[in-house]
Length: 108
Image (cartoon, rainbow, N blue to C red; front, side, top):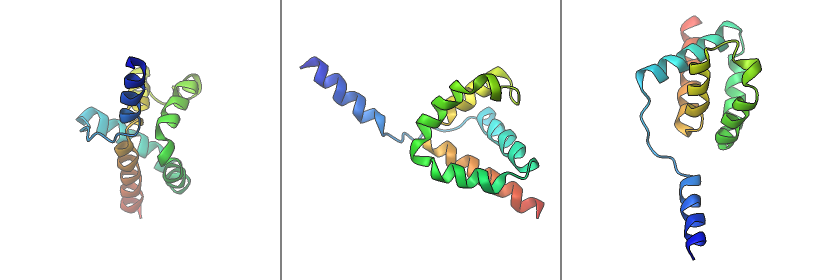
């Protein structure tokens, strides 16, 4: 009976969208990533990709752990780890899309 309760408690958290607030350093990290994307003229593919994988944001954040040796070249180790944890939260995807779109619109 105890094992079933643990499984049920795990599922309650699996799809939760707790309204965690982002810290200032988290927002600056998202802005750095948005600048990186816009400078390379990859804003449209990036937004399309982020919109299409929104339901899989947790899986994507875990994939970042897998690709860490390759992608950590662009961020410090601390920034990269924080970004991977941030992207587990669904609101972070929206924040990143908004930042990319703001930078594209300000460059037009």
